[in-house]
Length: 321
Image 1 (cartoon, rainbow, N blue to C red):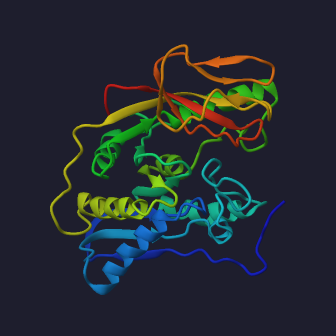
Image 2 (image 1 turned 180 degrees about the vertical axis):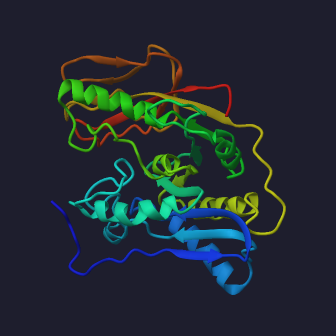
C-alpha cells in the first residue's frame, strides 16, 4: 500500500555551475529518511557557497539534501520501501519510492560522479563502499574503477567494503530457488541503488557511511567528505586532499537471510566484529547451526530482520583497493 502524503512532497536539488569547464558532481543525502548526517553536511556546504566563503570554480555540482522526502518526513528509513535496493525509472509508479526514482534517475544520469551520504543504526567507524573492478561481465560492467577508488581514498575514512552487488545476487538466487522473500528482494535487479545506477549510466560513485545516525560527529564526517571531493575534482580551489595510506579493505562474500522469527544470533553482534572459522554466528529455529565458514567479519547484523530478508553479511579481508 502506498503512503502518498495528503499534500505532495516536492523534490529539491540545489545546483551550481562555474563558467570554466570541469566535472559534474552530485551529492545526495537522506536516501534513507532517518539518515540525516548527509543532509546536515550538504546544507553546511551550501551555506558556505551562498555566503561566498566557498567558490565553485570549475564544472558543476548538484546537492540533494533530502533525496526521499516521505521517509525524511516520517523520520524512518523508508517511505513505502527501501529506495536503495530497487532503483530504476518506473513507467507506472506504484509507491512513493517509484516517484523518487523517476525524478532521481535522470538527475544522476546528468552527472559524472556521485557521493551518496548515509549513516548506520549501530555505532561503527565510518566506511566507504566500492563498486566492482573494471570488467565486461553481465552483472555490473565497469570501466572507471581507478577513478572511483581514488575518490574513495580521499573521503577521510580508513575502511572500504566492496562486493555488494555480488552478495545481493547470491541472496536473490537463493530466494528464487526457495520461494522466499518478496517481489522486491527476489527481483534480479535487487541491489541496484544510487551508486549501482550511477555506474550503469556511465558514471562512478561511492557511498559513505558516516557513522551512527545520532552521533554528532557523523555530520562532520559528511561535511569533510564533501569538501574533500570538491577539492579532489578541482571544482573548488585549494590543495588536493591526500589519499589514505593505511586502511582496511574488505569484500562481501555472502548474505544470509533470516528464515523464521525464532532464528537467533548466538550473541549481540556489531557490524565489523571479527569472526573466526567455525565460530557459531546464529541458530535457526529448527536447530541448524550457522557457523563462520572462514575468518573475516560480520557486517550489518540485523536482529530485527523479518523472515525472508537479509539477516547478516559475511566479509573477508582483501589485499587492498
